[in-house]
Length: 112
Image (tube, rainbow, N blue to C red; front, side, top):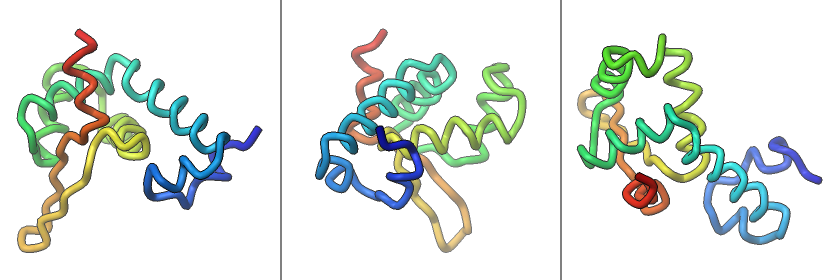
């Protein structure tokens, strides 16, 4: 069975869907992303606000004691981005990073 390193260079869902193994890997990744309580809360926040800055989201999650530090934030966000639940939008004028929900991430609307 292929592991994560076999798919590290894949950037789109279409690349994963070229093989059964890729589809299975992406599906497993997606389920782990949306079923984790912290990542589920991140999806809820981003979905409710449509677009949120990195700093604002990090601050909100720390204030609500959902995460302890930036390391936990980065780990969970990377997971959601890799599972195509969150899009990263970079504002090059202000050098600021924003997150927005994807269609796949909108599953959060049906999980509650």
